[in-house]
Image 1 (cartoon, rainbow, N blue to C red):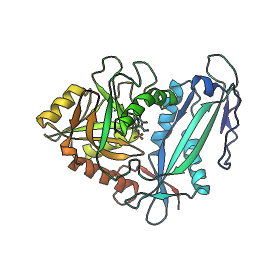
Image 2: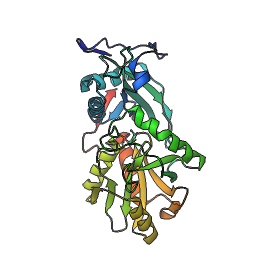
Image 3: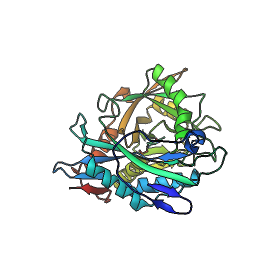
Image 4: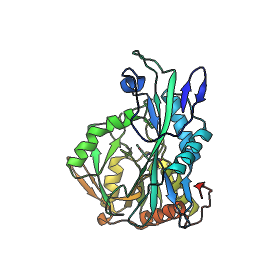
Length: 325
Ligand code: PMP
């Protein structure tokens, strides 16, 4: 779908997967004016195909668009694009649990050709799909996280809240150092004080306390408004669990793990669903959580969420939308 300042959105079409022709002066290539989403389709046992909270992804894409001076894509076009792609794409990969998922990558780019720093007057929205297996191989085994001590992902009044490539570009070096140190994800702290935990490169974080309450970093403008995060908060509150959205410092977590006050840590996102965190590592320390075993609430919330997504558990909040029979 193409957007032009004087025409609005037009020219929706489904075309075969292939390279995009682009002018070398296209704004996206120089100024990173682009945004994207990540959302999955789930095949249920009766063969029907569903997606999870697409209106939340559509709203987040619009929010990202506002921050990145791109046009907002109407939610109906967003949902329709998933529907049309499902109609032609049948590639699925089963996870070890036998679940079949397809990952959508909707994205919007500045497609005006000029050299000069200003918002583009032409944009393109596309969606591609890829069959996905598990994000982390090895099922729900706890993962090791690298703590980025000398690299920030997003600062105050920056673009941290937007799902835009620049934030990920800023995270890649730390991610690479993490890999080199045996970690599969990197954890970022706040850019101003390097004190408070923000999020992982592609997931939000939760801390489970011995007394039963749960804490997760609040949405203060620098972290992504994770849809899994929001869903997990709702599902935990449904069960009467107290969830605090607040600042969580690395010191608090280190101390809490040491005293046994923090009993579980998990990360969540569309791709990895809910994954236990076993170790937090940096060049100066190693914090091992819950004996490096998946925690009880972590496993329960994973079962609950995947149960809803695969149509096995009741969808009390009407989160699932059918894309095809
Ligand atoms: N934080 C970042 C930086 C991400 O890239 C993602 C994945 N979209 C998340 C958190 C989790 O968001 P969601 O639950 O909507 O997938």
